[in-house]
Image (tube, rainbow, N blue to C red; front, side, top):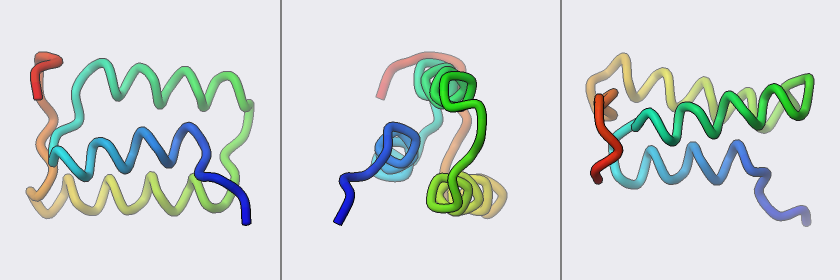
Length: 66
C-alpha cells in the first residue's frame, strides 16, 4: 500500500479544517506543476474537494489562518 501523495495530504488538510487557504491552494498547484500530470487518486481527491466547496462545506478563505 502506497502512502498518500502530497496532493492528497493537502486536500485532506483542507477537508479537515473545512477551509482552502491560499497557502494550501499554492501548495496544491506547486505539486501539480512538479508532477506534470494528475494521477487518478489525486484527481479523485481534487474532485472531492471541489464538490465539498460547491456544497458549501469547505470555504475558500483569503488568509492563511485556520
